[in-house]
Length: 269
Ligand code: NAI
Ligand code: 15L
Image (tube, rainbow, N blue to C red):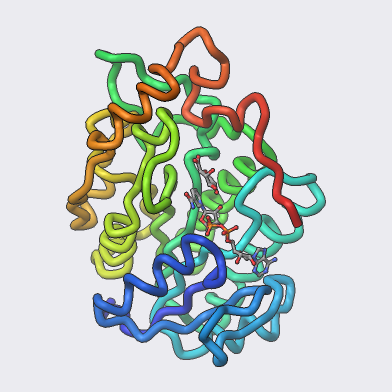
């Protein structure tokens, strides 16, 4: 597959979408945008719901690849998750198949495997092959997305890199995030690698920086050509002084998904 130049970014109005709108053009991409919310400063963005198949089909027409970020990014009722994340991702893949787009970079999440016990010092890192253990309906929708991506590769030859993103924000803001943080610059590096690596079929990777306190195995991400440059450790002293180290006896601290396991943040819309 030739390196993609024209890329549709769904979820472009959101937090990660906004970061990537700023960072990905430096890699030479011509970005197009899709979101149910208006995308600030982008009058040509398509403003539509993922349930609008005609709008989706038009948005993917002629692009080389899609970075699919749109959807509910926290916990919500099953009905809402079903519409936006499960059916919405299905509609996206159908549009991609119908328009012959070759590659999707799919925003999966650590919450697809959120019930997995987090490694303690000396334990092996969590591999991508660990079984799905969603911690919420939200995480369940990400497990579904990864399976959908596998189906569209096996059946229709649509390639996907499913990125189990940790926490992609400007800075880590909790002790857990010291392990799962992906700096925005590393996020752009990883998305670029996922767009340009050859013959990915369906590849699952974890999305994080090269954190000293990393919980999972970045081997499959590195195999795409991703070389993370950042590490959360410079933030550790202040965060640990404020909150203390993680306590393995605390259910909020014992699993990859953190407090999503016990008291997930709820999608406000
Ligand atoms: P966000 O909530 O800030 O942005 C999501 C965007 O999707 C919003 O602009 C929203 O309007 C749009 N959207 C929601 N439902 C839609 C629908 N039915 N049709 C069209 N657009 C819709 O979330 P954020 O943080 O930017 O995350 C982006 C993606 O990455 C999400 O899929 C999220 O699950 C995933 N992710 C993000 C992580 C992070 O650290 N930011 C961590 C793990 C996964
Ligand atoms: C996610 O999947 C969420 O979309 C994001 O808002 C963060 O909460 C992140 O996981 C996390 O685990 O920190």
